Image 1 (cartoon, one colour):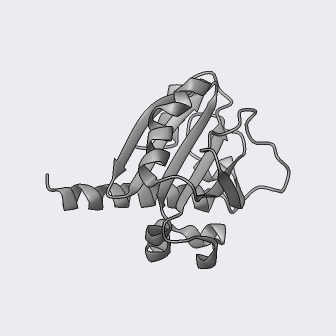
Image 2 (cartoon, rainbow, N blue to C red):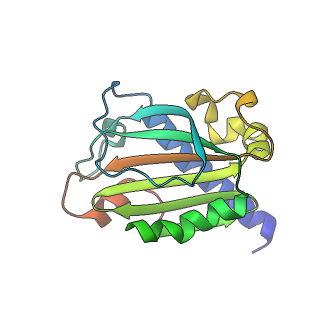
Length: 178
């Protein structure tokens, strides 16, 4: 499979997952009922946006999900490769299990779990985020172009807790493609 085809497939998959997470962010209230486990973020990450995720947006699944949230961060002092490496291996030092990690053509998607919390983290350069904001649905988080320099890394982390006792069933129910 050619590199450009792989890149397009990854971008479509990434966009689907991110848009699904962001659409879920439209529900919920302002209380913080999300998981008890803090999502991992690289050192120096500055939060620039946050939205609640409503588990009702994942209706039709056989599992119980608690409210979660989607949070966007700007990372200014790290390269894309350093952020990707953080999500691929460093998170395991804090007890996270990396379920799937893909980084191609400056776009990263990582799915991880800890206890009964599922995290979907994505990353891209500020230039890519500005250029592809509609493709990735970033307007749902109300991220302004002037909040990101081209060489900043935009990290978007969605977390949701599984209220059942089978984490694998929760991951499958979220249809994350992993």
